[in-house]
Picture 1 (tube, one colour):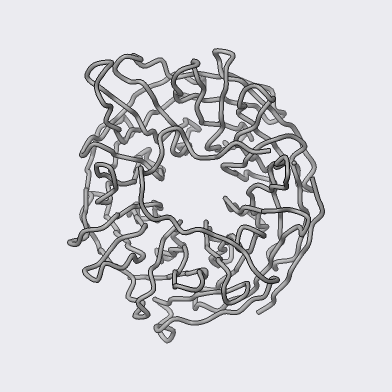
Picture 2 (cartoon, rainbow, N blue to C red):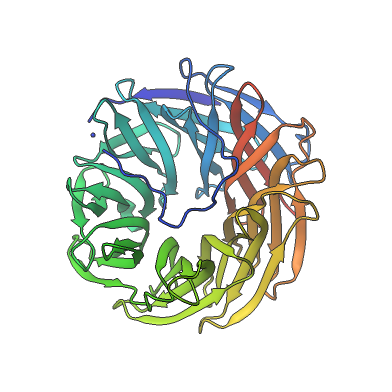
Length: 467
């Protein structure tokens, strides 16, 4: 295993990346803080002999620091590439072989920054890794986008910082290493939907900072690229009172193709926010939405889990909704080659109490739904969905067992919606585990990543399971 630490230099202000409809109204979220320098150690969990299933933890920093995995993706060699936030002070990237061997570990941080916040990970066809997030520096505070690229062996290729205020929310990589990041910027008066594209050497190819179609504030939350390097950005824009789902489309040179804003009845649908975007085989955008609805203008709104499909010209084709509780929040979306859309998230009232998953056919009709409470009380939250080549859907998140301790909870469904398995990780340490992301490899093995909590520290957790 090779461990590398890279130090950057430099440059910038930040609104938040959280949408206007929050995930939750209260409850526990791990807090990351850093102490000490960048060090690296890896521990195998209790199950290390069977290559079909293993558990790993990884600590980068001192014994009192807080590290957490935030994203995972599979590279062309079948390795799981994990992005971690190292105490909010640096990015960490880990490459795990199928048998759980840590192939390499690299870190990037600028000691001049107050924080380098890891957010998203992407991998191109050559195996190059792109770690993205935001940097912050006081006392203004200043901040901006930060994208760092490593090669397939963990060596630093380049790093790039935005030259304007902003917080990065999402990242996509297309053919030929075309990289696009989106997030929230500012012109000093309004928030902006800020999108930046980079070439293969990390130079800015184009950038756009947009107000919404009504000339007021906007934000970019999610981005996807089609085969022609057209970028589709989903976010929100405001009418001065409420935020609504807004999409921007750009060609390969950054020229805006179109922008569209949801025009639902404001009396009954006061707010819609983007929760994820995917493109189908024809390049049509599908957006996961948190959709607030109310019976009258004075009524307390509930929140629907929703999906809206657009054509490549930005026309809405259909909207599907699911309403199982007072709050139904989408967190992830995926689409298969047949156009079937799977969206997952969680349901509950003030706090989440169950996983909530829905699959739609290509016409937006519901094929199946599942709400699962894990046979125990707790703030159960699905956070990721991935599809294998057979069309099975894998949902991963944080769930609670009878012991009341949070754990990685995974559910797999066949194409008809029948449950293949449900499982909680079986780490016997008694430490809490909070899941952040998941991915599936070519053999159908599921990788779930997040953080392992103990009274004195938080470390990266990685679980692989296969059936």
